[in-house]
Length: 311
Image (cartoon, rainbow, N blue to C red; front, top):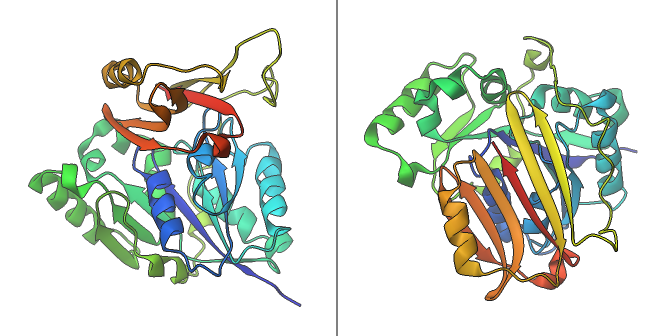
C-alpha cells in the first residue's frame, strides 16, 4: 500500500529568502496537518533549523555542504528520519550553493517511489541577480532556476523597474516555459503552489554533472560544547565560497546594538545568527548588507546559540 507524502523542493541561491518563504508557508499551513522540513546548509553550523524551530514543523538539519554528497547518504538519512514521523507534507530546502538535480533524482528513485509524491520544484530568485554577471556565470545559480517548474521573483520591493523588466523578459524566454511565476516581497508564497504537479520531463538527467570541491574529511561532527571551551568554531569551503560558523553556550549574552552594527558593516555574502542578547534571543539574517531581526524563544534553540558567515 502506498502512503506517499506530498513533497516540494524550495531552492534558490544564497540570500534569496528561502527560509523566510518556508516560515511564511508554515504560518499558513492547515492547523490539523503536521509538516516536516529538511534543511540543508553550506555552513558546518546549521542556522535555518533554529530559525524554523518555532514554526510548528518537524525539522531535520543537514549542515556542512550539499546534502547529496557521499552518494546521497546524509539526505536519505534525514528524509527517512522525517518520514518515520508520518508528516502530511515534506519541504526540502537545499543549500543556496547546492544543486537540486541530484535531490530530484533521489526523490524520484525506486527507493522513495512508494513514500514520496514529488510536486513542483519552486525556485526563488532575487531579480537583481539576473543582471549580475557573478550570478549569471555561476552554474549552480543557473541550474537551480532551470530545474524548477515554478519561479518566484522575491524582494520585489527592493527592485528597480529595470530589475522587474529583466525578470519578466527572462521568464518569458524560458524553454520549456515555467508553469507559474510571480513577483513577491518578503517571501510571501501562495500556499496553493505546493500542490502544483511537477512537469514530467527528463531535465534532471540532462546537463553537466554535479561536482563538489568542498571537503569534510577533517571536520568532526558538532554535538555539544566541550566543557573546556566556551565555543565551537567550524569552517567549510567550496565553489569559490568560504563559510565560518560558531556555537556558543546560552549563558553568553551579547550587546544587541553592537551586534547589529557589526552585522551591518560586514561585507560577507551572507550572515545568519541566533544569539542571546541583552534584549532577548534574536535571529539575525543578513543579505546584501541589509539586516533583518526576529525575536526567538531561547527554549526553542536547544540552549545553543549559533552564528554562520558565508563569503
